[in-house]
Length: 158
Image: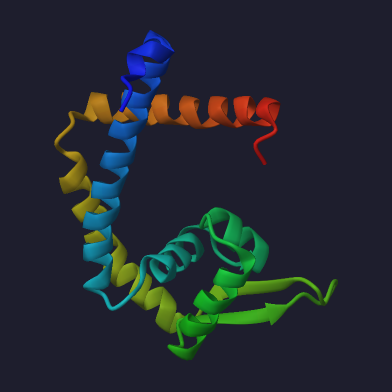
């Protein structure tokens, strides 16, 4: 296997950063996923409850976008949450193509009961960094995400 140094210092640095970011994400995702499963939910289901719990009623499309999910997957997740009595769908009176999703009273109670515990678990995991480092990392990740999107647009990767 060839060393990345033949591709230059910038590539070596970027690849190292990407590996560290991917490993940190995988670890955080695994740990938060384990916490979410304690409540009998999948990460996708929890993401829907969290989005609706904080933002209120949303269209299926907005919910899919907010949850970084596809429309088809979101439909399955919402159907499963509906079967549990945690969310409800309503069709827009202005445009029947628009479907809204909202928490039911039971879903609201569940969200209010479990979210503080989950937030505390995430805070305990993130506490390996100082509050200042957490803030700085958040800023850096936002800049990386926005900048990468702009570069991606110029590379025609989509």
